[in-house]
Image (cartoon, rainbow, N blue to C red):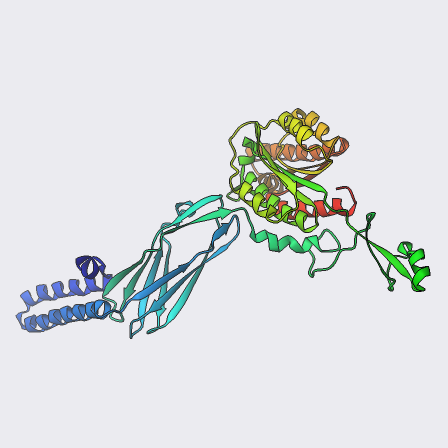
Length: 444
């Protein structure tokens, strides 16, 4: 009882100002005795108002019910909507201050929202959270401080709603990019269209309509039916597509509060979804100094969930990546020619030259696409105009690193290895477009 009626009572600054004015009035009445009776009446009024405010807040079964609606899991790097529903049972309007105990990963210790609730009505508060790391996010309690129209006292109401939400790789991107799998070109389409392939995998015979390629006319079927008939073809299916993710120390480099590893994981999930929609088989291999996680390339029910769970648990171990071990593993375990998309990073030509023999060995047996990152900070430095000697040196060094990135692309191309040099922000769209391009060219 004490905890409910006294422990949840808080005094507002207006109450302290009122009490301070009572004290000042009594001091003045000491010098002006004629004011004493008026001061006593004012003090009594202050006490009556305080009691009245207390009765308004704690009398009866009036309260504010709190219901927090969280998604089952967070999408990494995306905005996730949190909803708090407040339902008032007070017969008068109340002012509510909502304090949310957010997970420590967000580093927001002053989260507070203010809302005025009409009598016996409900209102909803919305806010967005964008997690930058995978893992568990522990939410504490939702606390409300309620004030009556007198606004002298506050009543605290707690919702015992502590819970934990896991942040998974960006599953929100799946719907965002799924139209790419059905568009006629490797660009983001505006409507869903059926893409007719031109490979040698036969689909069906249909009546000729204006616009069909005359080279696909089936003359035997035309002779039998006395109508022009054409063959239609679809993309070659059931090709193996593996996402190879480098988990070495270089992938811990941060950009916009997320690491290169997390950008790669988000992109691998979106790409795997597109691969499965194109009726190919999607797989996953992660490695650093050893081979860590392997999800065999399959096209089966739940394959995307298997990949999602595998990606959720990936963490860098700050070791040097062993491409020789990767090459041996692919030689022994991935015997069918496959499309391999390698997410890694090379900052200098020297770092590429150390791994180039193993990349060439992989490319001799598979279609290899190396995906690495532009340093956006270097791009910003390149666009500035330095006015000091130190600034000139910094810009020269930045230009040198940017030049080496371009040289890496040329060297990979000279060795017959496909490459993508992209910013972390554009990684997913560029990777999907490259896959669709390779698919359209019948290279996968």
